[in-house]
Length: 524
Image (cartoon, rainbow, N blue to C red; front, side):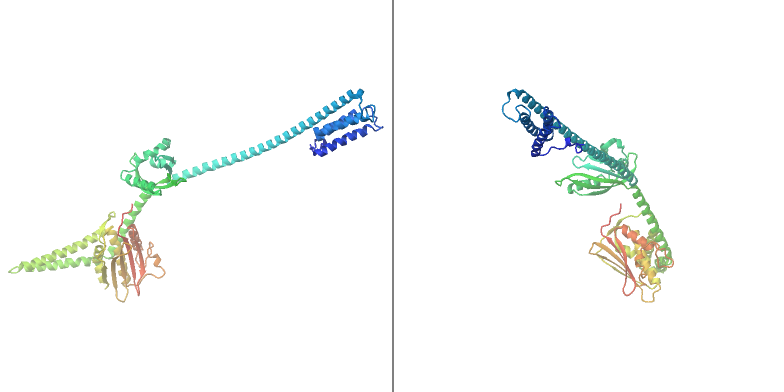
């Protein structure tokens, strides 16, 4: 609106304002003196208009200039004697009234213009403020919407996290090192430990009473070490609920350091792995049952050889018994010879009993038992049991056992099953070979502090392009094989913390090696 109305145009520069004042007064003078207008006797209104417009457009300064010029023009052209600037005592009141009127009109016009401009500026400032408030309101509204979306996303994330923790039986937590009090406990953590979430963070202290008495020292040692070293900690322990339920817990903790590197808190999670433990136990039992079936199957295949191995000491015992009787039934019994024959009977019977005991042990069903055992002794026992099978196929058995082997912690029956599987496989690999047949069983100590046992044969060797499948379940190269022997053997060796692998021999045959660490702990 200000641009379309000339009276509301912005003030011109000062020099232009004074020029406009002169122009307006000159125009008023010219117009008032035009004969056609007939304003010679009443020019005041024109001069007042000139003052008003000059003050309106230029401000108070140009208004004063217009007033002064109008007073001079009015005195010179319209107050008698005209065309004179000399004193005119009779016209002084009239001149003063004109001057005062012009000053009033100019001041009023300048004040009104100033007020209008102030109002316009206030209006513009108000519009600007309103616009800023609108922008601020829109920004606040957008921020509020964004916050609502963020809060909604956070609620969804918390819901997903809670659901994920419930499905995985994992509870999260955070605790302060100073005072060891809890900062955060998730709902799943309360469920795992059997607490009511309404108890709040005070349940953190009560959890200590839930830790199984046999595992408290292990748990305390892990946390104390993590605090001292400012490091992660991981520990498995059991908790005992009020109803007698035992749960297995796997806890992970991560340290949080401040800007100065001081340890301030730990964050982490506790997972209920009871189901996993039960599954592991069921798997171990299934593996033990499968291993026993494999032993029984293998021993069934070796029935003829085992019977021959047992018959040898029994036949020897019968022969010695007859010899003893002959020495005793002579006219003069030879007690010394009879005593020696009786000693041989005892020796042969003991040997037969030992063989039967070993066979019964391999057939026996029971839980794995770890004990200190002599690997060389286990090898010798299996060679005794399988010697007749090797002899049956004209196979020479050679043992190269290191004398300085330490005892290791392991299950005798399981490790003997591994030896039996490897030796029987070596014998089977040489049954159809027309060249010399030899089986070598070796043991020695490695630089990695392991006991290494090797079973080598001169048979057909590893199956070409299938060597990497030897230890897969149900893979077999035997017409009537089950494909479980090597798979079970590897599982047994790995459960003892060791490894089992195969290599080709040169020029023919294959070697199977298994290495066991000298310090073996039973798996949890």
